[in-house]
Every structure is written in C-alpha cells, then in structure tokens.
Length: 210
Ligand code: TMP
Image 1 (cartoon, rainbow, N blue to C red):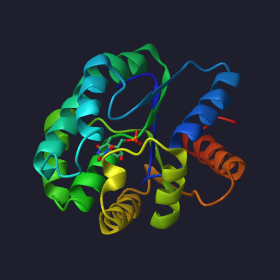
Image 2 (image 1 turned 90 degrees about the vertical axis):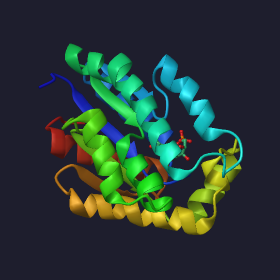
Image 3 (image 1 turned 180 degrees about the vertical axis):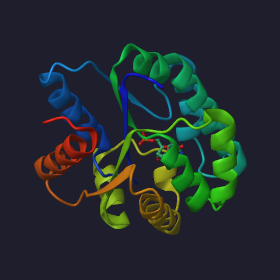
C-alpha cells in the first residue's frame, strides 16, 4: 500500500485535461500538499521517447496490438521511474491520462476489446489502480475543433470521427463499470466551472477541503 494519492484525468481530445491538471495541482499545493504532475504517454525519460513513436507519423503506422504494447511499455517505465517513487514518498500524483486511455483508444477505438486490454493491464500493473479518475466528457466534434484550434495535431487527432465516437462511449462505459473510482465531468462548460467540479469531486472522494 502506498502513502500518496493517485489521481488521473481522462477523456477524448480537446477536453482541457492539461489545464485542469495544472489548476488542480495549484489547489492542492495551496493546502501544503506535495504534488507531482505528469502525463501519458510519457512522464519519464524512456516513456517520453516511446511517446514520440506513438504520437507522430501516419495514423496507420502501428497496428492496434503494437500500439497497446507501446503504451504499456511507456506506462511501465513511467510507473517505475515517476509514479511509484512519488507515491512511496507520500506525494499526490496527478496524471494527464493513464490506463483508461488505453482501454478507450485501443480497446474501444481500435476494437481490441476489453478482455485483451484487461489481461495486459494485469500483467503489467497487477492490481495497482488510481484512487480517483476524472473523465472529462464532451461531444466529439467540439473536442476535435478545440484541439485543432490549439494546433500541433497528433497522430490520434487525424483518426476518423467514428474512432473518436467509439472511444468517447468507451470512457463513459468505464465510468459506469467502476463508479467508485470514476467521476464523469461535463467539459463543455467554461474552464472555471470545470475546475470547480473537479475540486468538488476530489474533495468529496478523497476527503480534502479544496
Ligand atoms: P495527449 O495528446 O493527450 O498528450 O495524448 C497523446 C495521444 O495518445 C492522445 O491522442 C491519446 C493517445 N493515447 C492512447 O491512444 N492510448 C493511451 O494509453 C494513452 C495514454 C494515450
């Protein structure tokens, strides 16, 4: 059992996860809590190298299984180098994406299915789970429009709309299957309202007053 807390922010493209990780970190630090912010794919030196392979190039560069393996290889490095040591120290770790993205993108989006992703999860992570997962949900066209406006399009943003619709439904299904861990946040609202909803969820689920 680790001493810290592990919170993940999840969802499709353009939901504002990175901004919200930053906002939540500020709020927790104001309480004097030690906070580490990180992201996936990436968050450690080796994992960032693997990230480049995943987010650049042609949409069809890898088949679904290869993507699954690369995401889990990056995740294992991220856990060993960054997440587990921080949790051991008692830090609060906030990650912009984690394993639910693999379930949604590779499991639902690419159609590998839940069972394959779950097997890989157990092999690589055992029974390690986030304490809380916030799923930032918004309609696909709006999310893709927002991420396009932001510029710097990645490989996944070039995949078709049906792929993005499947992964959105995937995230919503994950939340239904694991209500004790997951909270769905309506990300169509203004940034401040989303930040407040996140603070409320963290406050009530993890017993802190934000
Ligand atoms: P980012 O742009 O949100 O940082 O994430 C990079 C892309 O990687 C994003 O489009 C989602 C995708 N992704 C997966 O397909 N599977 C995963 O397991 C993770 C963590 C991300």
